[in-house]
Length: 283
Image (cartoon, rainbow, N blue to C red):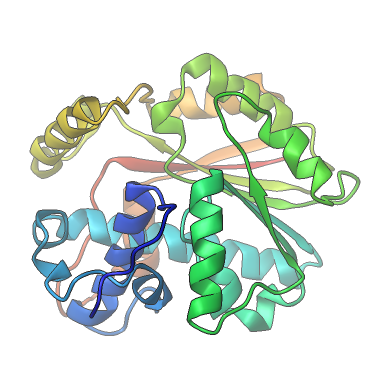
């Protein structure tokens, strides 16, 4: 495979996540939790990409990523069947739901919010591999440090009067508690019947013992890259935040819940890392 070059580049975390989803299909036992190799086609990594340390030594993190994606996918499919027709992905990265699940996606207005470079790169690569962006997929570029993602979303055609599913993963780790509460308070004002699925991260002392060393390595790497991890929460603190933000309903989905949903009786004993917790909240 030849490595793709371009003037803009996607976020490194988005690339790693896309490759983890593809690696699951290529090396883990069936049934696969998620079938997603489109991200691999977009990234076009070197032939030895599976030998990268962040691919070889992160099996439990890979399991968490595919479970996270499957959980959100199941949520939007179920909500679509209930009549919801708007879907917002906050920090979309190289999400491929719109390309893989056209049976559901074609009935939705989908808004992918992310940095300009990632979205420009993604749109070009989708066209390169014959998957031009459909009219119901809206790319919403935002410089999160200087502009309002909410304002940009409203300018892109989003209908504030109608309920929506919003997914947000890989974001809260880098935000202050005050910024997270501001975001939740904004989202809690969405039309009644809206649903938020937002990933939060546990402090290291609440992790399973086997995940603590990997978490410490990840924190060290993030600091070295100038993107330090900022916010960690217990499940109780997450629910308290949602209630403070005025959501009507709030619960957390733990790693144990994910195991029950997707990892029972697997031949390869694949199981997710314990660091991520989902807030599932309703307006």
